[in-house]
Image (cartoon, rainbow, N blue to C red; front, side, top):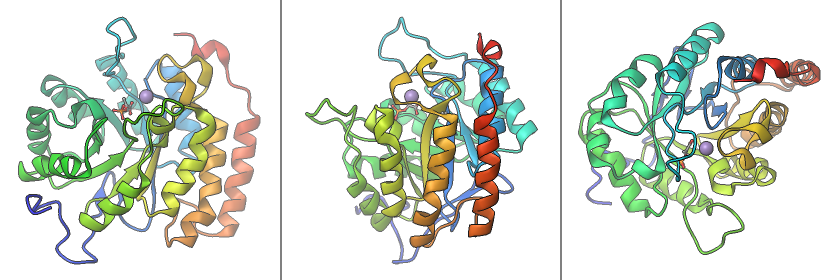
Length: 304
Ligand code: PEP
Ligand code: MN
């Protein structure tokens, strides 16, 4: 990858660790675990998500407010009012947030209210957007294009780096193939290759790859086992009622269980989960999350 001068490794152990908040980084020993719904739907929904996840090893909250939908008639996202919900929960629960930008015009408001900018798959080669985020002083989560080669993916990251922003995290989210059983094909080979080729952290999104909730947890565990620096998972207080991507959403309790199941895998590959560094702490977290799982969700609060 001769052209990717800035993204390429300068030596075998060249790795970048990217700061996302005072406590959270990506690319170091601790895994980045991002959880939250596909779309921000209401303050009440996001409050449940943030309260439960921020106590359970999830160190970043996601939620789309500008949604790239296949149909122009589908929900397009809450826009700026959704950004305010993200900013308030971040403050209240002391947890950083990530959300997508689809255009240069959306960038300033997202930079002001979120801790990381997501460039979605459909915009991986929106070069004007890549140049604009290159000029921002915010970490960027760059998702692999729907049918992008590894080289195209790395060169898209190079655009951001070349325009002055060194804080890029790559996200493998599955690529198009002939098999429609899964939504996309999760390319874990690309995760290993990207870790060998570049110094950038690599996060895996098994939710958009699988498209089916029953496949998500095993793929997340495989991602951690093969060296990913983090995972991003869609989860929702009432998964079947998600306004977007309902079929792939985990419940909050399933997400908490998934994080717990990652602890021994993380340890086996020399990584840690935030706040869970020993078996003793795991026991404490398990008992807290059992209590959280037992608490009934206030369904009234979820009505938009
Ligand atoms: C998302 O993360 O909400 C999303 C739309 O993902 P992708 O760009 O990978 O399809
Ligand atoms: Mn989604």
